[in-house]
Length: 248
Image 1 (cartoon, rainbow, N blue to C red):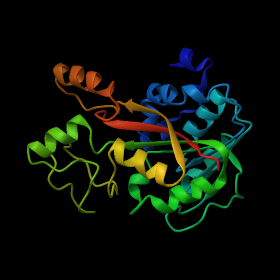
Image 2: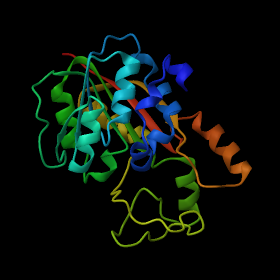
Image 3: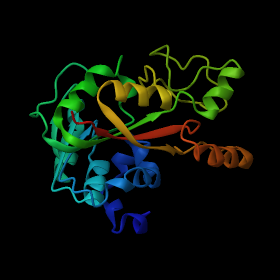
């Protein structure tokens, strides 16, 4: 992965990042998603839901950003994120506007956070406001239309990333999620629905790519299926949406 990035950017990923963010354990997918941004001149980056800041700094290094900003609802992550050089602020993006002027950023990203919000519109509108004209946005989300969600629904199970209780994981296959507790996932989207929603809010899809979050120990044939399905982002277990703000 470091070879793909061109430098040892993985130094920013700490144990705290790994514990908090599934994306931190699958950096190769992220590096593939931001490939078109390398050399694009993005100097100012914002990560919404930055956590401990490792991924924000990693992406900032890869694309050559001069300023890396972050926002997160959890004050406990601030010290480490700021220690890495992220200009981090405490913010509830579901209830508060982003504290930045219009057109301030070249790239705004959010990795696996939007599925904690009741709806996506407010956050997308704020992203559109703070991104400069023709600026970029990178969003990663669990894919509602993934091959494994389709299979679970056919078998009568609840998709893992749509929780109906804050106390128990109801309806999921227990053998795969033994010991897990609800994480606060309210809902997610199919890759098609999210692409259409971003277009509605003024973004053009530049690239849609798939991701393979780390799986629990499974049969080798499931790994083979998963790898094959990920080649088609609409069937991957996670999708990365790279978009560009449209200009009038």
